[in-house]
Length: 397
Image (cartoon, rainbow, N blue to C red; front, side, top):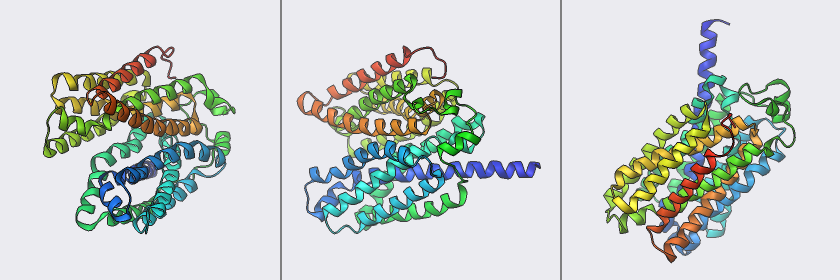
């Protein structure tokens, strides 16, 4: 093979990685789309804002179920075909939401969105080892999961901006069209990705443990994987218990105005993108100490917010910490031999933790105070750091 051929193959691999990253951006932006549009949608479809909030909770819960279910029921199918099908489903769901004549139709569209989110994330998050050489797996996984952070920084504000002058239905149409464009891009850039049963016989992943290469039926139930899933629930629940209510905290405790809040959240999101790539490069070698460090950064920033103020600085630290959590946990799963099913369970645990954390945080805000929720988030981050630190020898679990 000539140097030109090698260079062309390398470009093709990274183009595929980039396409999948745009896919994660699209599904997360679609999931979060109602955040900035909730009031307008509720008024148009004639429901209360509380009822309209089901447009956020329903996709998350459906994604938590669909990720492992799709991983099990479609394990023999080419993952390229599955990713294309799920992106097509996302396009249909967004366009159905755009033209929904009433709330039941909108909610049904959001359920379809949840199916696409769960399946696409479960299949896409672990694709790094199948698209690039072993030495580049950490970087590729960081790029794929960067779509999640970028969606928070750019995707949701852009959708809100579109709706401000063209209406919320236009924002849904824009996401439907983006999904269709991405469908064509994925069809062009992704190579064949045989289902697990066929891939294992001819294409073992070079960085994974021998037990995973043989892929026994209970490999994904291994002790290390259970540790990662417990850590996911702890750290993600703690984060969303606090972060869901960060805006009212800034307004009520820090006495911040709209411009300050917008700037603070933008800096938080930008720090999250940076944290994603820094952690990905570091965690590729050993994810355990990375997760401990990230959890400590989160705990310190959340605990300090009610005590010393400095919200801009502390939100940047918080963003750096949480921004690296997803990629670090995903790389830990890869190294534990969890495979695709492990990733699917991780996606399920992640989405359930979002719902659990937001719900628990709301109860704490209502019954105690807005500051108390920051302490709870910090406490769960400390527990996460401790659990990760004592979770066995650091042997690339």
